Length: 379
Image 1 (tube, rainbow, N blue to C red):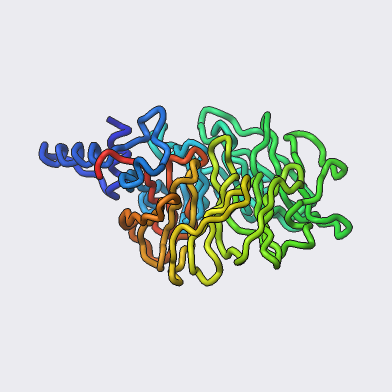
Image 2 (image 1 turned 180 degrees about the horizontal axis):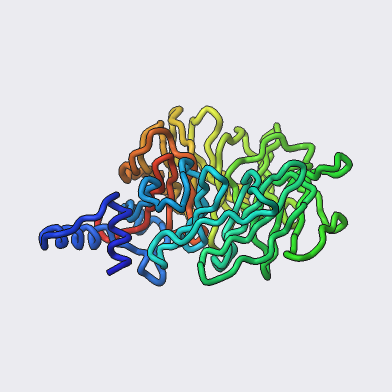
């Protein structure tokens, strides 16, 4: 019953007590919203269930406990399975949330030194054991392993890195990949695999492929490492592996993309690239394996600020399309559009939108909190 109460509290924004009728209403809402956090294997979003994609839970910043600090930004990270979340408070503290543990877990302010540096980027490791965060502190940077489970102590921090970090993502065996600008002007933007407790080894660094590519002039934002996408002025789209610095695929386009996203979550992760051109004339999907590009639907100038592609590349999800507080989707085979409803009330456009790596959970973050969407039972 504790999990039930916590879920309802954060979905409705307030607890309800008392009469049997009120309890019946809450149970009805719970069943109608299909709280898939209790499932072992939640449905992956795709054409067969896209009409049932709906808001199933909310994390309201106003309802967070006092020790979470003040959270005003809709920035967040989500674990690969969509069950764990990291938020950022005004003191650069990491607020950790786990639905399997009933909600709020802890706020971590671990740092190298007396005060935390400026938070730059963070990511959950592959099995959700730690949230790895990188900070900038003056001329140096450092990495902290924040533990989402209160019973688990944090792994060693990596302090005094002579670099300005760009992004961090997990490696194997507790290690962390870091893309950064070294403070030494003799070194180019680089990528390195760091091990907690080990010394900084500049000789082990490799140049950042996309950041050192003289041909590319656009790097598409919101592409999650180790993948990266760049565009040359003549429309050559390159897919990179940041961990090797190599181009793994390339394809030629006639029009330059303005926004785009690759698919994640299966053996063909990164094969497909959904994109919208700068004037927002059309939504397209590029197949890196064949080099073929298909126009999915005309947009006629409708803005698509947030764009995600399902693991099977069968659905494109757009959020805040035409500046409307709603979730939209398109079938990549037919171009059919689905208007799936409004997301939580916000006083500004979303700060961040993510699709979990396993393709089950769409999350929208704004100044009031997170809105969490999954496939539900009701249409």
